[in-house]
Each structure stands twice: as C-alpha cells, then as structure tokens.
Image (cartoon, rainbow, N blue to C red; front, side, top):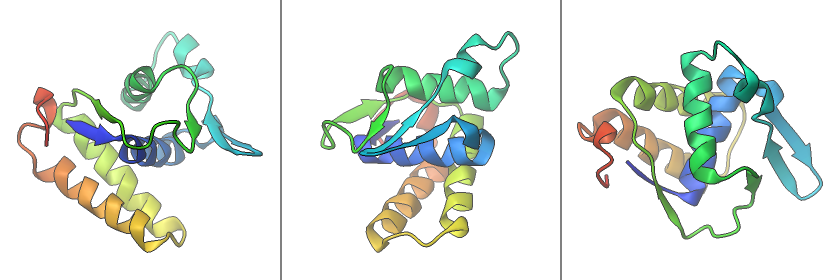
Length: 125
C-alpha cells in the first residue's frame, strides 16, 4: 500500500499512541518516535513488529513535519496489520479534536486500509 508522508506519520502516531505512547517524544520543533526499546526486545509483539516495519521505511530519525511531505512510501501490509492501523486511526480520532484536514486524511486512509483487498500486496491503493 502506498502512503503519502503525512499519511504514514499519521498512521505511525496513531499506532504509537494506541500501543506504546511512551515512544512518542515531544520536542521543540515537533516530535520524534523512540524505537530503541522495541528494537532491543527479544520478544516483540505484533504491534511492535508493525511499528518497526513502519519505522524502517521512514528512516532512523522520525520527525514531524516531514522533510519531504509530497513523497510517497510503499509499505507491504497484511490484512491484520492494515486493520490494526485502521483501528488505531479510529481511536485517535476520538481522543482529541483534530483539524478538519487531518480528520479527512484519517478517514480516507482508514477506508483504504479496510476496503483494499490488495493492501498487503504492495500495490498502489
């Protein structure tokens, strides 16, 4: 599945907030995600493996705003991973108010994640 930089960051933040909120670090110019603890884990869970997969396509330093917001990233997801991200997005939509453009992006991304039968194939959605 292909994500814009903004979509991938939104998906990552949603999954982090839903599964490992301690990984999110607020910084003066945005935030970063600390992958060290789960990268060292000898028994990572499903969400941890998905976070590591997402982090790997983003690079070792995950900061927002993205350096190139118009770029696209392809991420091979199976149906369970796509559902996990969609569920995390839905949860994040409820926990705080978001600007309309973020809500629209989240809803569109959730629709793609839950309805695209080729989400796990790496094909563009």
